[in-house]
Length: 227
Image (cartoon, rainbow, N blue to C red):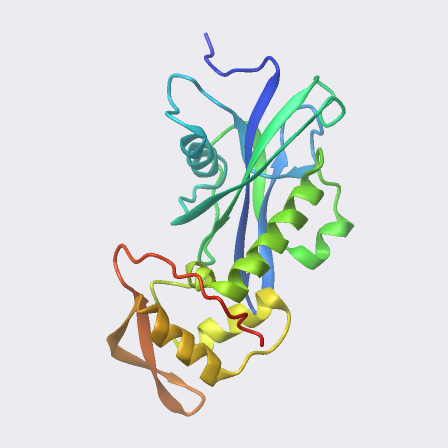
């Protein structure tokens, strides 16, 4: 017998972002079950009271089952509730947002027909289930604010990355250019990065590779990066 709690409908959904080719992408799954069968939606689902010690565990479990991914950055966004959000009845959703370096996705569960990275700017062209479009927009705004005041976008990059790659990811998220010298000052002040011994070709020269220090805590800055 299933131990998932369904009365009222209490779900956990995650907005998973990445950046590729200077585009902000969100991971969506095509629903293989009603309601909204065949529509795109966020990976998520019901809490399992025997498997999940908390809602963070639910979010991680559902992300892995529906996308094959286990993001290093996962943050609670907000709660949404109401009687008209789900045709099955009154629903409460705890939304998360997560970041990951771009990689292929592979659903492992029958309730998902497929999973795909979709450019955020193209979401208006799709049929999205429930109120997931609004949830994604709230998460995008949160990501922009965190990008202006922290080094959170580093989680959209592979383990080793260049300053140019980090700068590009930040500019894609906040939708405006930043000065390299401002970024370098922030990197030095944060003290969360290590310089790798390796370099890679970049623009006709060799670019230094950086990595995030193990267990590093993200620093929040008082000054807006774009100022």
